[in-house]
Image (cartoon, rainbow, N blue to C red):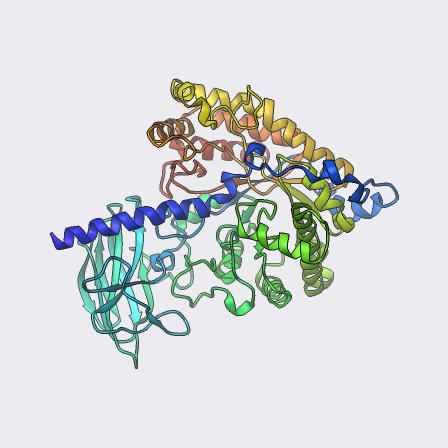
Length: 573
């Protein structure tokens, strides 16, 4: 019974962490579309006299030499990229054959205490367990909340002296010798809980690897799972916003970042840049990097040097400053607002935030240009980004100190979320006031509503941004994110599960494939270029239905959004 109670305690804590994690990992989608969720007044109305004129006359040719060189190199066809879902122990994505790379940061445990209340763990400089106090142990979690992982004999490798155990019978040690174990794994959704019960302070346990069946001989030369690679192979860009843990990042200096030697890649520091570059090189797909908001010039310079030296010269690197710095739900907004006010860029903190984001983007672009030298024109794509639902942000970001002259593209997140017949800024489907009406709909009717919203809401939004970015400033229009935007966390607690189930069924409906055809063709016909799906693999939940696939080994024929993306890629290749 004690064992059972402890497992229940795990589930309660993990459930809470899961919800928080989903909210953070997919936060960029939660508030990207609806203007009703952003109640800040548009400062351009009252402060237009303070805003510099952004008309283009004699400067237009200069802008074309930067952004339009990219636009002219492209055809009228749009291309499709993808955002990679964040690395986490609860993710349904299988990026690495070494599952330990997706493990949760160490949890301190102690006999007689509640879960996670084991005190402070002593760590090595690299992050491994240096020593344990009497009655204390360290624990981590892998593959939780999803049964969709390969079963079979996993190989656990490690260095050092100590004792490693597993908490539950879904991972049974069947063979072991110093530094090596064979573990029979039966994924059941409860998670694999690995425990370090003892470690030698003079030779601590370190460099743990937990290798999926069949990859023990190849995991070092090829760290990525072949199915993960296969599902990404046809995309044209890989946006690493979530892999870089960009939202709310506290990374400032180069020494702060994760490296391939870090115990896990599922930390608040993001995935090591070396892996991002290696994945791009392996797939021969252009990477899209998002630089942490607080990154120093030295961090940016060393980041650029590694990209220059390691990224295959045939690939272009997309460079963007942070993610959604206009979005008040993220700490990066607070940071850019404070920096903008400190520089006295405007009396209004929101306008100051936009202008600082624009200035800092250009500063970062210039550092990359210095590092890349003559190669910068062919190997870099400099991206400025703003809020799709508020095209005024485009004018502020692009026009401030002629930032558009230093950029190659402007990007938005043109999500679709259905029709807005009452014109209150929320889609009718996402509006809590309409919950009873929404629950009377069938999944197919929800899909039909999404189709109608593409015509009534998404297309006009794209058109407005295209007019500013491309017609006014001469830059091609990209989508840094996009896809369906249906969430149910905002509904009353007693009705949320029903709405969640309905929205999940709608996202799984075969007709969603047709929705994507209409959506992507609308993006292309409206002048949009590179479009990045948000995201590749993610389960459905009340926080959203973001994944093109719900889990890594889902049959693509049962994933209509993924099919719709592949259809468009094939039709426009």
